[in-house]
Length: 111
Length: 114
Image (cartoon, rainbow over all chains, first blue to last red):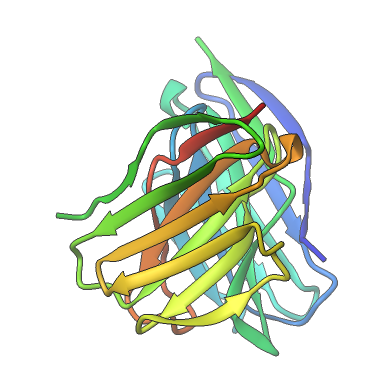
C-alpha cells in the first residue's frame, strides 16, 4: 500500500513557505523525497533514515518520525523553480529493496 | 556521466505489435529498475534487476518482458499490449540496490497503445 501525502496540491507566492506530509501504514526503514517537473524525470532531493533525523538541502529540509511512520518536507522562501510534483518514497522495515512512491503533492509557485 | 538514457522518447504501437524500450547508464550502477507512471499518479515499481539478475517482479503481466543483457543496459520488451498500458515508462538505476540509495531516473518513454 502506497504512502499517503497531504496536501494533494499547494499554491504559493514566491517567498512563501510550505509543508508536505507523507504518512505510511508500515514501519519504515527510510524515506526518500523526489521532485518531478512536468514531462521530466523525478529528481532526488534527500534520504532520511530511521532515527528521527532531519536533513537540509538549500532551503528545503525534511524530518522523519519513525514512530509515527511519517515524514515532512519543509520548503522555505519558495522560488519559482520549486514548482513541480513532490513524491515521498518509502522503504519499509521488512522490504528494504523496494522504493514505493507516495500519492504525490503538486506544488505551484507564482511570482 | 550521471545520466540514465532512455530510448525512444515516444512510442505509438498497436495491440498486435512487438516493441522494445531501452535504458542505458554508464555510472557503474549494479541495480536497475522499471517504473510505470500514469498521468498525475506516482511511479509504480514493475521490475528490479540487481547484478543483472531479476530480483523483483511486482506481478507484472507477461506481455511485459524485462531483460538485462549487461550491467549498463536494461530493456523492456512489449508484446500484445492493451490500451490501458499507455503510460510513461521510467527507468532508474542505483549503486548496488541496497537500502538508502538514491535513484537516478531517465526521462522516460511515453507509450501510447492504440
